[in-house]
Every structure is written in structure tokens, then in C-alpha cells.
Length: 151
Image (cartoon, rainbow, N blue to C red; front, side, top):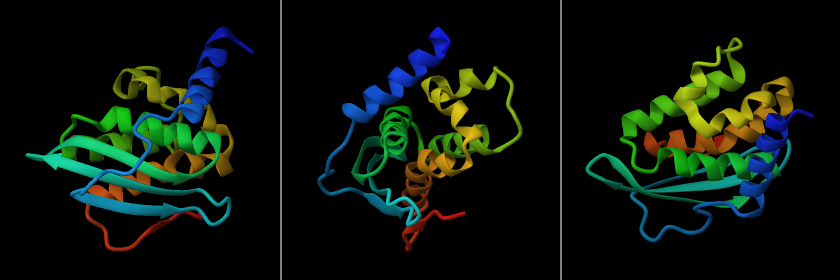
């Protein structure tokens, strides 16, 4: 395993062991629930907005290491962004994991989130890495129904 792969693996394991922004957000402005019935991952993402900017974000639930690390890194990546900018990042992250192989320039766009690039080789794990992101998108768009990821 290369030094870079080991570093990426360690970042994911660290965010799984000590997730950032894990917990309940008092009086969220928006919230959504996500579930992957195939593996059992379940997340709730709650947002506190100030003037169209994500001022606070938290997540609760349970999931595998990839799912939890992705949710943790997601909260760090979107805090301080506008709703529109966060929605663009959701799409960009999803594209990196599911679209045609992206060039390295995209790493500048997504920063630390590029640690999940290798997940694309394992289609069943892509759902784990993207569940919290789809749940975030539902919260940002104020969707009425829970996110259920099975495809």
C-alpha cells in the first residue's frame, strides 16, 4: 500500500473513531433522515442556517466506518458555505464517486473529500459514502420524505 493510500485510510478511520459534529443540534432550521436498508446505515442531518449560510451542522445515527467518516468530513466541508454552494459540493462529491474518472484537478475542488475517490471501485460502498450527502441535500431542499438509498 502506498504512503498516500495509508494516509487516506487513516483519515477515514480517524473520522470513524472520532467523528466531527456528531450529535443533536438544538432547534435546527432544517433536518432530514436517510437510510440504506441494504446495509442498515441510518443518518439524520440537521442544519442551523444564518442568512442562507450553514452556520451549524450535526449528524446522528449509525453506520459503517465509510459512512460515518463521510458524514463527519461532509459536516466540516459544508459548514460556512451557502446553501447553493453546499448543493454544488454535494453534486461534485457524488460525481467524483459515480461519474467518469475525474482528473486530479478536482481534488482542489473537494479537498480532503478526495480520500473517498477509491470507493468508486466498490459500488456497494459508494452508497455508504454518499448516504449522508443525499440526506444533506434533502435537508437543504427541505424534502418531505426520508432518503432511502438502495440503487
